[in-house]
Image (cartoon, rainbow, N blue to C red; front, top):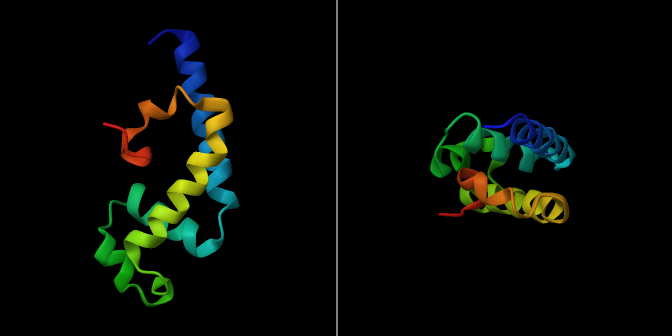
Length: 88
C-alpha cells in the first residue's frame, strides 16, 4: 500500500474505534466480543449481562450505527472492511 493509503487506513481505524467507544456499553461489548474476540452470536447471547436482545441482534444494531456514522467520511473505504460491514 502507498503511504497515502496507509494514512487513510489509520484515520479510518481511529474513527472506527472512536465510534465504537460512543456506543452504549452493552452494544459496545457485543460488537467487540464478536469482531475483536471472535465469539459466535450464540456465545454472546449466552452471556447473562448481554441477554436482552440476543447476540446477533445486538451485534447488528451496533454495526449499523457505526456504519451510518462512518458513511459521510469513508463511504468508499467501507468496502475494505467486509468483516464488519458485510460487503462481499
